[in-house]
Length: 343
Image (cartoon, rainbow, N blue to C red; front, side, top):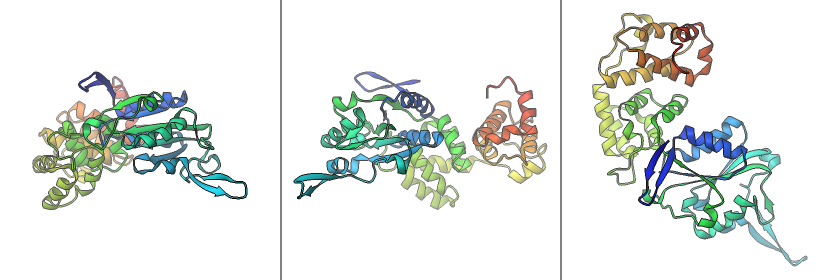
């Protein structure tokens, strides 16, 4: 757990993994929860990941773009009965359609007007708005940017804030790497950010249009296969010129051996000395390790010149990406030889 100074007090911040663990507790205890953090750190993803892991419903309500009547419903007169009937928005959870359990996430809540915030009071506390009531198994949560990040965020009223437990999220490379390994992020990007972890999220000196964040790097991964000139232009547009220049320098100094050569000749294939290349190599091997080449890659990374720490990273990252790799003779042999390592 780390601390973040706001000028008034010191706030305890959590990684995505720590935030998800605590959110799971609050969800089981039925305590509404609010995630705070800078733009692009993955606040909303925590809630989506929780829903996916539990195989329950998920509704993402972007309140920053809404009007109060979007939440309360629109009154339609019933002239015969001389009453108004409220037409409800389709996005509200319905147990028959969306499942008996789920998460309803009020995203961009810090961008909402006070009128909209007032509409959410009863949803969070009483699980009801107008004549609509949340299904009993649905848990309300929210996420919002911080005011200091100049992301259109406003302060939320104390009346609404007091209805939530509050979790402050910070970017963390290890958490992002575990996510990246499972989501087709380019190994060169994973290696680069290990080399320059401070660039995982940085708003220093940025014009606040294009800057490095877990979200913008995920998009940037898609352009890593372009030629140098186009890659630089694309990265400038996605993560800013400073970070783009750092990536270009990384590409110039990284020298990777051919993966097929490693698999065919694990005891003689080249092992680079330069740290940047070693970071990129561990990411490449972890991404491409499978049941067929596990034994060959273990021989390669088992060489003294590869380094025991780098070898451990390869195996742990690969098995985190694909847990079925742990059910192989190659892994069992490695695990016996490395039983001092905490899995």
